[in-house]
Amino acid sequence: MKIRALWTLAFCLLSACASQSKIEQTEFQDENHPDFGRGLKALEREDYGTAASIFDRLLVQSPASEMDLVTSFNSGNAYEGLGNCNKASERYREVVRGSAGKFPGIEAQALYRLSLTYECLGQDTKTVTSLLDAKKREKQLPMEVARAEIPARLAAAYSRLGNKAKALEYFNEASEGLKSIAGNGSTPRAQKEALGKTLFYMGHLNPAQKLAEVEPIGYLQALSMQQPYLLQAVEMGHQVWSRKAAEDLNMAYDNMLRFQIADPEKRNQFYTRALQVIGELRKIRLPDAGKAEDEVFAKVDRTERRIQNEIATIAETTRLTPDAEKREGLRRQGRPVDPRTKPPVKRIKK
Image (cartoon, rainbow, N blue to C red; front, side, top):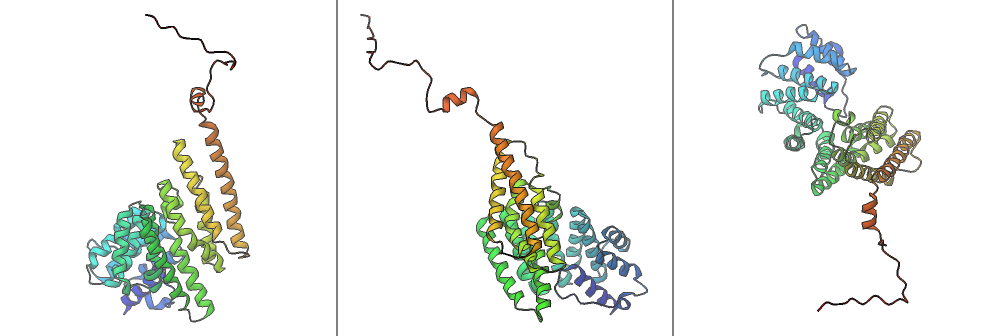
């Protein structure tokens, strides 16, 4: 029963589930696992370095029991929090291999988290595969994850891969999932909490996006799919999730100016697409949604002005050479001719 309590607490802490069931400290302070409880507390306060150190000490060579897999899962979550997506993906793969169908709950959750690490590593084909594997196990996942978060992340992944039809299909599926969640809250307060949290996780930036260490156009393609959820989370006005969503949106627009693209033509293409993404966000803005949204759009305005300046600079620095201007000009250089003067007659030699 102690192990079951440990697993239940870990699952609620790490799965982004809406029902934040609180388990009393005495329930998981088993004498054989005091460090495990400390590791969970470190995760809860987002002290990921301490959590990774604790769970790594508890790891075994070949995880096989449920307790082993939960430990590996928590270690992966700590590394994910540190932005070490490579190490996190290694831990989640250990969970999937160790479970091999014996523990479907944690296996489904590990597949979902694994997809996020692949997303962070820029391996979008693996991202899609892992998300689809998790989707097949949706009965083992919280409703918000299965019906909203997974379709939303699939939409972003397919958008980066250039498959617009699939991206739109999963975007619409995620929107339908949100409607189900909206009608599932027991009280207005609980509903606001659930929606704000789900919207944030549907659109949040992964560690690589936060560092602008991704392919530039792919970054914009994904942001186009992610930003509607983040903006809606801001508009929910929740104390925690609206703040987190606003932070991600502000960072997303700051990062538009951090990409170093040497080729002027590709840089111009990037900035042109960025202006389109900004236009998309403006179209879905609610009027009078509050101070938090106003602050987000103040950031968007500043970013837009700087991008427009960058486009103008590119145009200045990529002017045609004098020879090219002559070739491209409507008027050609030549000797002026008096129209009243007959052209000279050419003599043909016999």
